[in-house]
Length: 344
Image 1 (cartoon, rainbow, N blue to C red):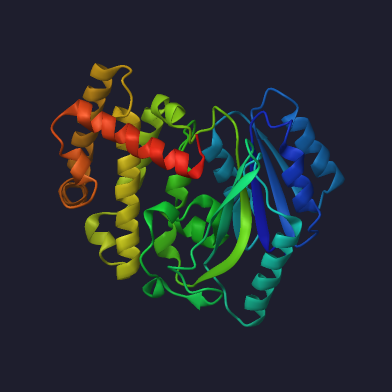
Image 2: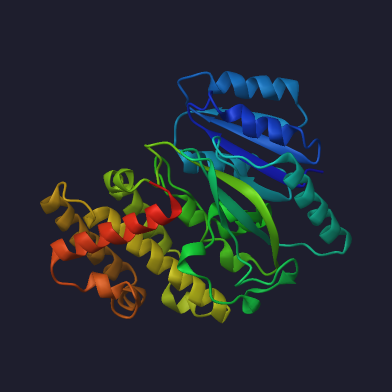
């Protein structure tokens, strides 16, 4: 039995992928490691095949045409056989001993006839520039080291909202949610951290620094300048999130979950707005794209659109009539957040 499927989407990752793979295969037969070579042009595919040959009962190598990060995650979901599913990017890592701790916890719950739908854990930003760390935890809003339901969740701060790095779903939950991540699109992590949540009934917060997120490349997807260049992809992701559930459906979920999911919609809407209008480049084109974007949202789910647009914190920015002021505020807000987290 494989308790956890770890999927590592790789694109031109030959220089750093061995670190996470070595950490995982050292765990042994309780896990499987799916290395997805997403049409790399370097030796990524050869390295994946090398590990599959060396560890045939642990590692699966998938060679595919380039489809982007989301296609790698979906390939892992389709081919995974583990009870739980965890995505680890090829330049990030988890420590061997922490995986063993997580496995011990899963086995304990199974022995107690408790099948957890979602494990939440901490993640750590690892800054290459000065070798510092920034921990993200949920002690203030989730019951610590106990099984709970969404009704027991407290207010979640915007600065520590759940991300893919902190989530490990039961694989059957992901399949039941029918979540689909688009090809050739960055920021699909936001969909992953939203669509499956209502399908989780039993949750467990493991107060463990499980995931280590490397920060250090100038072209990283969370860099604000990079995000502005990829605003069309951010729009694509947000529209999938926005159309995932109607406002009526959201209100049927446990109240704390409904509030959290609405906050998630509001947050990703704010980020999307920032990427579209938060730069002076191509101002006329971006201004027109932004108008079309808002019209599409209103046409697809008017009630949710009105709540986001007129009855949320985001409305303070969205309803400012002057485009230049909105653009200025978007840049200031995100760059301040970047400096605080040392993301840019």
